[in-house]
Figure 1 (tube, rainbow, N blue to C red):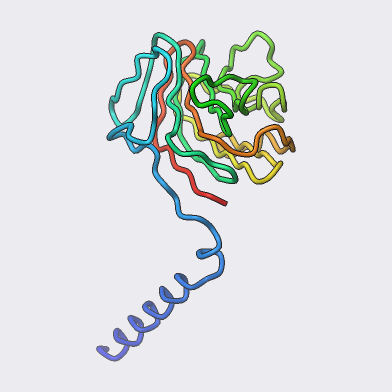
Figure 2: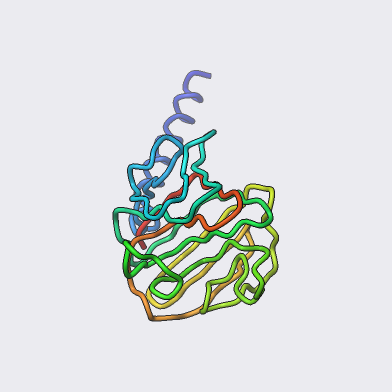
Length: 195
């Protein structure tokens, strides 16, 4: 019985060693946590949104503005969770050309705005670039975005559904910005890795 346990343990150790040496593990960049609920050290706030930390999230419900990463990103994968109420207006701005004055014209805005008057670029779309391939309402629940920017290819996945897969070459790198525009907006578990 003791020999069987030792043999099983040996197989587990060898298996773990092989997992660490796989090409996939070494080819991808390491994940960096930008926000884990404990502080905003990775961001510079711009504007007058009333960002505050609460229950593992950062939220705002008045003013307007952004949390802009201190670092720039070119090719990357970004994952995060967001919660909004129905009238909320927010977005994830990537490859921001001017981190001091972020707009939907000097970056890519992956929208969070279910009730946008012009539904063309509602939640899940990239404003001025690509309408969402699926209509997903996000108000009143936690949602997950996965955003991949790789060369000219931009991909957005919302709650497991691909909403954008398009190409555009206007912006190649820059900070990432979390927007507060209206309503109640919360973010948590923000992570990024280079590609």
